[in-house]
Length: 136
Image 1 (cartoon, rainbow, N blue to C red):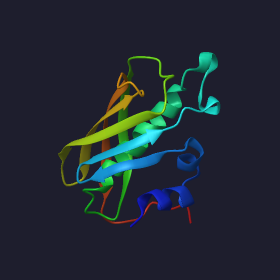
Image 2: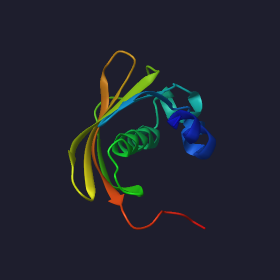
Image 3: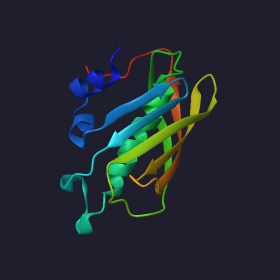
Image 4: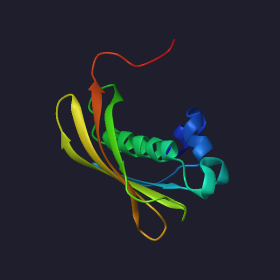
């Protein structure tokens, strides 16, 4: 399955941000985020909401590699912002720390093009086993 194509075709936020899936293997994902003015706050610094959104995608895609249910949702995502991010392209790496029956805990790091960590997060994704999340 081509996850990059699937997300670009079906997720408007993923496409708008311009996220690229660089690497995905069991328990791990690496994404790239471009530097674009429309993603920045004043001063040319990447908006914190964009950083968290990219981290949410990374954690979710890492969880997808071990999801043995039928769907998943972000249950919690805590982010610490460490440095302003303005040297793109940026990378986001997510590593699964623990997989349980219904909860997957993921550590996520957001870095600039020099490898400086701008944000670090810890999130939990809930594995759904009995229904798909849908609006229809």
